[in-house]
Amino acid sequence: MPSSRLRPRSAGMLLVLALPLFGLSALASAQQPIQENRSELTMRALLAPQQEATLSSRMEGTLDELAVSLGATVAEGDVLARFDCRIEQARVNVANTELGVARLNSQAKDRLRRLDAVGDLEVALARAEVDKAQSALNLADVQRDRCTLKAPFAGRIAAVHVKPFQTMAAGTPIVDLVGDGPLKVRLNAPSAHLAELGEGQSLSLDVSETGKRYAATLSAVSARIDAVAQTVELEARLDQAHDELMPGMTGRATLVAESSATEDSDEGTP
Image (tube, rainbow, N blue to C red; front, side, top):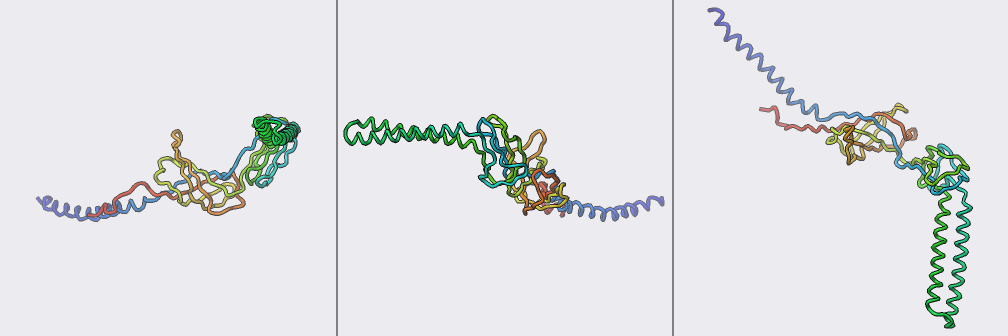
């Protein structure tokens, strides 16, 4: 009988103690979306030049001169290599001579036409021979121009694949040229974070070779996802130029991405 009198009081005390705990739990659940609306995404990073190219031989022949060496700085239009071009130059000379003969013949036909010694057809054919010879000269000039390899843009020589006096086929790689401009950052992010990524987002880049941190901005998101690796390729640009950075350096980039999870701001309120 005495024990039955204590039950209502003990039940009330449990209810009173449970109310503050329930309030704290509701408050924590209401604040949780605010704490998780941003997340840090860390990715491997590779520094790459804006412009780079492997320059190859445009003709079959013997390399007469290699004007650059590894690490050399070149300007746009600088001569990088020259081939033995005696055959191509001889073709230019022949085409130039044939053009001169065609012009003399056309001039003679014009004078004869004024004397009514020849007809209009012969004059037209003579002029056509001039055009034909001019086209042959233009073709020979283009073939001769292949003997000289020039830099298509300013940069530095990253690799040399041949030696002077080497005979090679057309398409043989000669040098690797990397652009002199600012570097770009290449990244690969998990495709699950695609909705959180956008151009203009800031990221910090820790470069292993220099041990320093650099600021960069996300500049491009690939339009294709690698289905095997489940990643998407990104590009970023450095906010400032840094002389100590070189193409091929690696590191880790950290990007603060907006969370894709959104919740109603009124959730958790009575």
